Length: 114
Image (cartoon, rainbow, N blue to C red; front, side, top):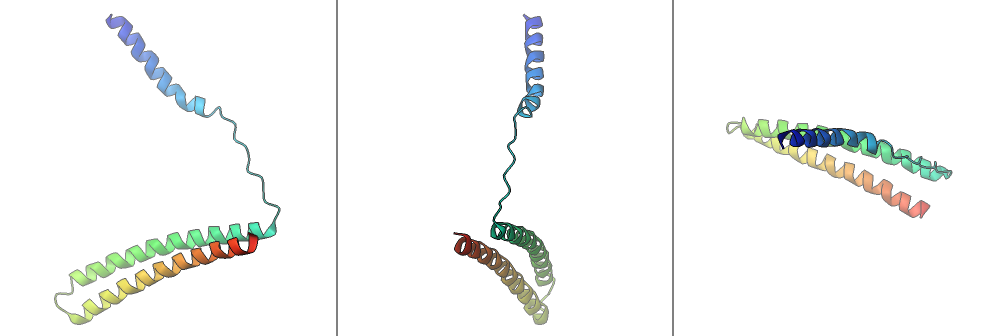
């Protein structure tokens, strides 16, 4: 009985290890390239805004963390507190502008290309 369990366990492990090879056997159909130049332009703009929004979110996060540190270490200094609040406000405004740019590109694409 124990021998059968060992064999069954080995078969199960081999089956699990073979799953990635079975998934790799699927045929992938290439996406046809758009012949419309407007679609290509908006595709480039969307990729650019995605990249810039990601960079903007990372930088805004860094600045928010810096402002929080500055706020916590202000020790009652009103000038440092005001500076930290301004940094947070500017970071939030930057995030809003980045999101607005993404919305403008999507809206322009919807209006122009239909």
